[in-house]
Image (cartoon, rainbow, N blue to C red; front, side, top):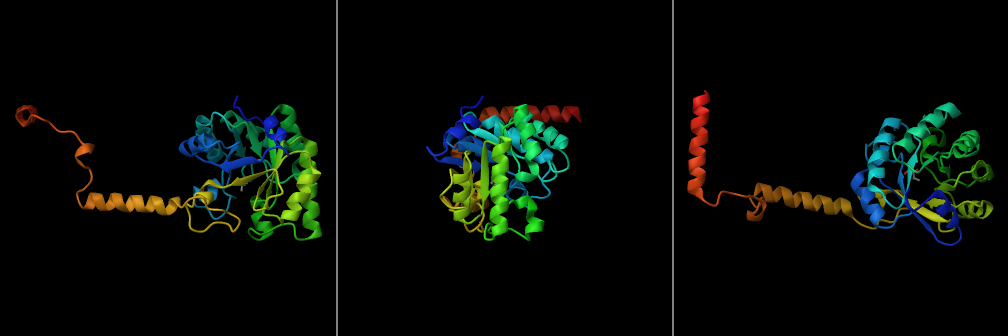
Length: 285
Ligand code: KIV
């Protein structure tokens, strides 16, 4: 069992901010765990940032299982959370349960679903079975087509009501935390005050119990990021510079340098061995 459990996350509400980051592979998960993240999240955002899809709708269970396995093998301390991709839990509770089990068996400590009130029965069933669940309200990217793209949520009475209903339903069903994505900060604050479980915001301001960011966004792998992201590094440019230097080193014969290869110190010995090898090859022909 990893050090950070869902119970520990619940205890952090109102005492200590929760820090969550996405990771999709072994090396990034190792680094995230070493950096002291509370939750390492295999998000279906991998469809966009790792696979280059336009949205998250085509991410499969197979992809989620592979990436969850890679992350789980790296993480010792943080809670490993895996996303249920679009289509893996909407059709029936039974299918949702089966797919959640696959993610847990791949090494996740908990699963995340988008929405709340619509999935009350599924969340309740998973929690009863012993599978911790995080919900997700506000902007729910899996509803990209209905929403007409990615946009700020919580501006209308109807949206505020829907977000609050989702959060209350998740709390009642036994979810251990809720992601609130890209809402007005007043709405995120309202939800945070109205539920007893932690809220983890992304693009929803500071009045929440924790924050989550996508690995590629916060590290500056891509030039374009959502407007609420703070870039903590410019790794995209750093990686490009390193690759350009490698390229010119090879083109100019500067790499490999003398410290990167091994050769016979005694050239006579090499000549002898070379002649013997060539002779043996001639005999074989
Ligand atoms: O898939 C994802 O990365 C997410 C975060 C934006 C919370 O759902």
